Length: 265
Image (cartoon, rainbow, N blue to C red; front, side, top):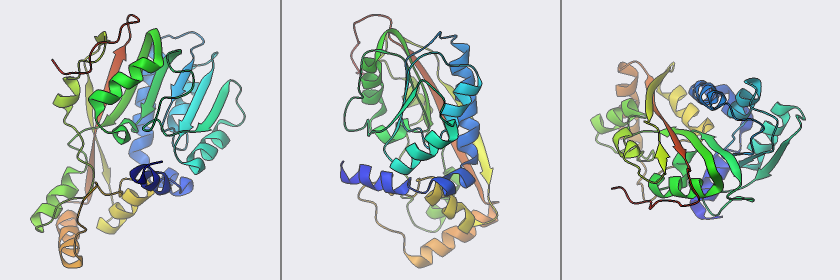
């Protein structure tokens, strides 16, 4: 596992803290599960990566997406175990510790659905990642996931900029860049939702970043000094201690055995 993947896995080790802080993640998973249920898949073979503590897994099962074989994965063992516990021994689900950023999953090319809620951003270049995900589904299969757009944490980035510092949070792609992906035989229009999470203060916000794994800095980021960090926290609190999440939902379908180029045309 690469150094950055190891850092991400370690960041997601605290499953109980994650559940307590991941309010937006729960809402996003419920909305994605609604989209998946609307596909009307019968007995689908499903691959879920980045399962976390099981928000999406549980939401899909609750909406009747069942009857097939599921492989539910995460790169953090603690998350996989928490998801397994959440599902309470439900049949038809296999769990595995797996880093899909580093290689293809088992049974690639046979899935009816590949999905993930707020995990695709960890795969690196989304254009390339979408092409890889399409190779994991069978002809006629669906790739349906949500990810974070560039508007995510805009308030915190603004507070740091006002303090003369730069945020270490990842540089998420814009919704326009995501909509421009031309890797699928068929792609539905992307859906963008801006979700907000209000915190008591900046310290609470930073604690939530750590709990959900979003504190892992971008590579080569220089840490913010104490004085500028305190100034940024004051700016953030004066603006209401609000954190925005731009959630972009993508739906691709593999219509034939041919996978189109991952280049944006």
